[in-house]
Image (tube, rainbow, N blue to C red; front, side, top):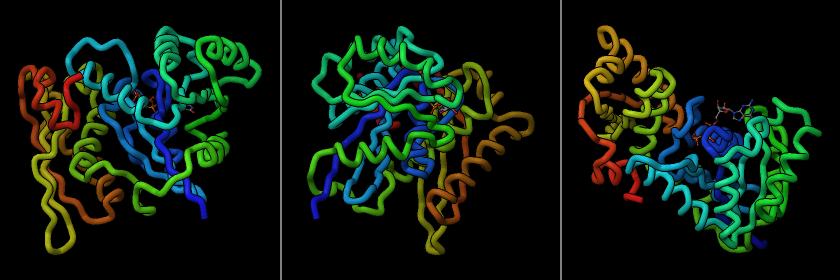
Length: 296
Ligand SMILES: Nc1nc2c(ncn2[C@@H]2O[C@H](COP(=O)(O)OP(=O)(O)OP(=O)(O)O)[C@@H](O)[C@H]2O)c(=O)[nH]1
């Protein structure tokens, strides 16, 4: 039997729906989905078996104009993901249309040699014929091998996209065991789930000014795991918000993250959270490395 295996980069502007699409495709929640922009900080590999094809999905951070060091690192990680891939799926929010961000990404993609597919997302919000001018505009910027209309949220068109991906990736042996879902290490997953809850449960600049790191991850003889995660904030005000009245906010963040983690790791998890203030954490190179990124 001929097997196929290839990397597929999911590329797009912040909020295009890349993480939602990745999750829909793999059928498991691997990557962060949040209504706020720029939540994905590093590559997450979704591993997907479809017939005799192993599709390795690379979720990339939203590509935007970087200002801080951390942002620059995020962008560098995004492009590395796109460059290593066999093909790139450019996800565009069909309702938002051809924004400056989409244009900039398309222009950069056009300079590479990778095959590019367009996935117009959120088609549950906009009627089919209205999408044709947008497809025209995008195809003027770069050569598109295929165009798909999908709703990552509802799943419309996602099966079709997967069938085409399975057939399009190069022939070759599987690079990962067939039952692996992600290569995201468990300790990073724990920190990511905490960060996701920070995004869900706090507002405005707080989630962007916070990061989470797993300090310890200890498997116990009874099969459970004890995890300590530290949330770093850069301002005292943010620390108070994250802790909440009598610790209610941090408790709620911990409870929700623990439920998700228990489900994903398929074993009892005991999660302990700390909130620490650390001015300028986002400018520290060591921290970038600790959350999985080198400086861009
Ligand atoms: N109506 C609708 N909303 C969607 C669809 N796909 C994603 N969304 C929503 O759009 C928002 C952004 O989705 P994400 O998947 O986080 O977007 P992203 O591109 O990964 O964003 P970054 O991590 O910031 O790069 C979320 O509120 C999603 O629920 C869709 O097909 N239809």
